[in-house]
Length: 156
Image 1 (cartoon, rainbow, N blue to C red):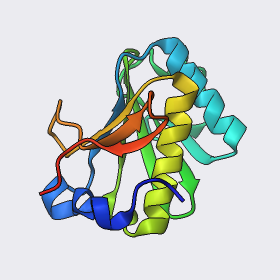
Image 2 (cartoon, rainbow, N blue to C red):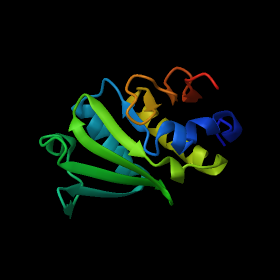
Image 3 (cartoon, rainbow, N blue to C red):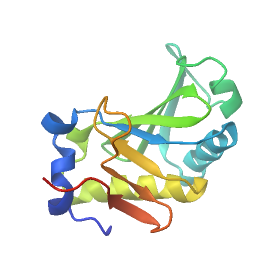
Image 4 (cartoon, rainbow, N blue to C red):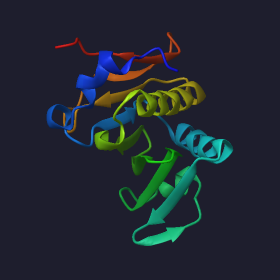
């Protein structure tokens, strides 16, 4: 169970208000952070699939995946039915999407919170969720000081 209750944040998971694919990111990242994240994926045993172009290949080191921006993609399933898609656009930000249609209800919210917390703790950095295409307006995220996922936007 997380500190967040579905009834307190369900408005942030409405695909009509947020867009179905909100933007998630770890700002101020580095190649070392990317590599640490990739190691976390393997250590946790999260099911994943790494592609380069159309080819499914073995997971590459971060510096290799980042050497051709937008060419590589990592799909991670932290739990059955919940998918996060990471794209290797730049070394200074870990950028990924989730599908809000997969994140309905307390159980799925808990999966997302545990996933964001694992990433944030590992990197010692915030993990922010913003409405699709709404850069700079986080509504939810892992707070390093609080060591948990918190609501960042005021309720309607």
